[in-house]
Length: 232
Image (tube, rainbow, N blue to C red; front, side, top):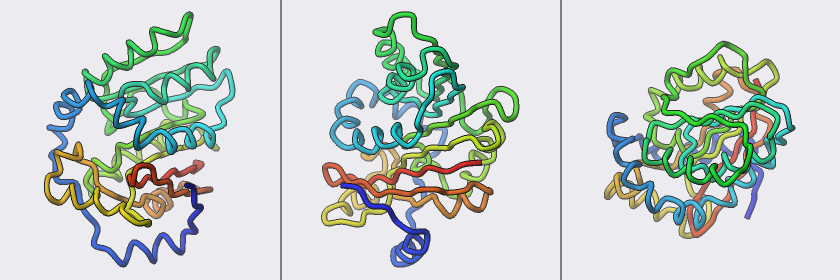
């Protein structure tokens, strides 16, 4: 299911429910996802695949572009990015060695593919300013405390070209029946949810000067996701 949400409704809805902040320290995230890497593909395909596919549609990848995926995970999206951009530059980063190992195995199925996978941190991206046409980020901001999001968004804005696309997918605050179960699970045991909790990021993007062109709500197996397309 897909729903386009206006910025006015985003603001109104967010005011009706207390925001959950991240409760797992950032220095523990890599270890958690090293452990989850063995089973993450099952979770990703059951609960996140529709939102991830929609993000790739909105990215409208053109062969020859320079693309960065931050928090590449097991490569579920990165595999499709590389297939769409065989003559371009494809860079995927993650802080989890376990997730990267799975991503490398998945990408090895592509012959003569042009890509680079490496361990790196979203808070301090490598490379020059304004170098990427597209930056894609799936299910990472829902792990980051609100007061640390600004540093990451500043880095995203720095490395994107003027007019470049930022495509984000986050666990979001549920808007349909049953979706609240995941925030309940986070309250009971944040590590059970891999540290994720529901957020809405459109207003924060606007604060950083991004032009938010689209925000959609998707729900799969009750799991709520937002897909955002913004431009620098």
